[in-house]
Image (cartoon, rainbow, N blue to C red; front, side):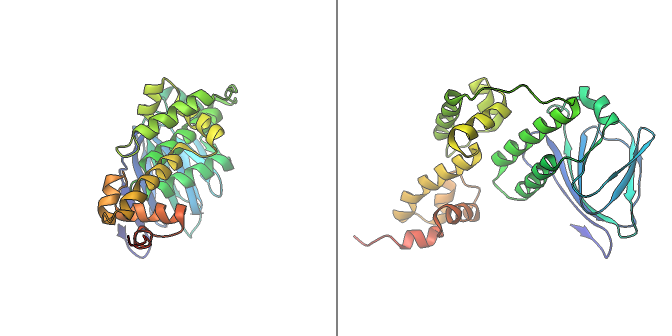
Length: 268
């Protein structure tokens, strides 16, 4: 973290395919000169407002608007008011959002789309949580899908429910509960589009794949805790990032901590 009385910056590279960098900042005095990136710039503003020039046109971002600045196209940026702004940015690689969309993004770089804004906020929250890479990939996939729809200007064709695909994904998650599997790996093994996988699973089971996987890991942790295994070792054995990660989800699902659950075991 770099901070003083006015400017604050935080940046990191998450272990999520498709995200080059996450950048959070508060600026008042800083003015971006004209520059360009090799990646897509997906921007939301939490406080204040931003103005920028792109392809000789002026744009602004505030409220629930989302800006998608295309790669290789110069732009600048600065606060639109004297109070500055607070923003969150995702830099996305062109492998997941193709460069063929650049023209559409130049024509319409800002979207007043509450659903897209919500999905981006949710992803930023997940990206600050260690061990939530699978969930982050899910949420990024849905963001890509929404961006694709907005840039094309047409809704994708409706797909019929596919319970069989949902059950195949559930079986795959069960078989990889502790070691984990990425969404891209699951999609490749099942020969399915990642977005279709997420939606088919949600329709069939009423929850996204990442929540099912977490619940399975909690189930696997329960007998180990009751057997007396230390919580730290249980977390490692059942696929959690660390002990706090296990504790967070264990309490969310069962209403108690792993330690209290283990102590509740009746003596034999």
